[in-house]
Length: 412
Image (cartoon, rainbow, N blue to C red; front, top):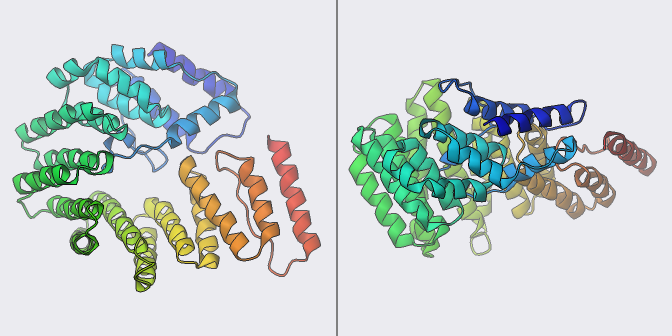
């Protein structure tokens, strides 16, 4: 652990008086908390520090590693070696391993090294590890498409079921099924696992159970879509949205409401993407997808502001897909204003591409060039581009571009 702590201190010194991401201090604090001897030390995390190792979608993203490596370059500090990262996890007490897997994945983003450390401790984790560490191990291996993830999911589900925690037992089985569906494209196996878990664990009528049923229908929709059954996928997604909306109307508890809104946000995005995939043959789906995402963005802004940036990012992409370039530009700029605080580099890059491409589609090539100058010199997404004042002369626009170039040069 001392190597990790020294590395963090070195990064802090190197970043002093430099431009770095707003998300960096919180992510570093998560690691410091995980390596601390105060096992129960916790603090509330913002969307800038998501728990990647409990991802329901079993997604692999290079964003965290890109974020970390960008900061090592700014600080002029060598990247922590894979061997140091692996050894730290190999030597960690088993009762703290879940916190360390979470923190290291968020901060370093090195899936392969973390997975290697998990596999080196596979027998120990499966025999003595908690349900949480088994579940996280399965998610990390599953994100890499490693079939050795399966025993970890099975063990975690068993442990949660033993404790009578049906919601978490289902949540693990959901991840297990998702891995088969999304990473291995074994739709029949994935549906079988999801259906078995649904009828085993989701028999109550509390809000968390209803939200889990919504996610179950959503997952079935994704699976049958993979089997090219669009009609059935649409039906499953529709049921999923209806159930999700029902849970939101029933709860007044803030902590539950945020969690349920997060699930609802994912379901709406999946439904919109489903509709947009069929726009060429069903033109009316374009307006339906936009309507869904607009309502979702307004809802998040009012009820769960921490999800607003993700929701409006998806809206910007949808506007671009359907050819509404002015609204894609407007939504994209709003999204980037929020993304600069979150450290999601891959998401920032995608929305920047939407902004530049929208400007080009609108015939605003000079402004597209202006935006590109900033974006190409700012991997962290800290700098924002804003359109010049309406009706500006070309001379004024060129002056703005020159000022932006000067600002970039000054801050490099």
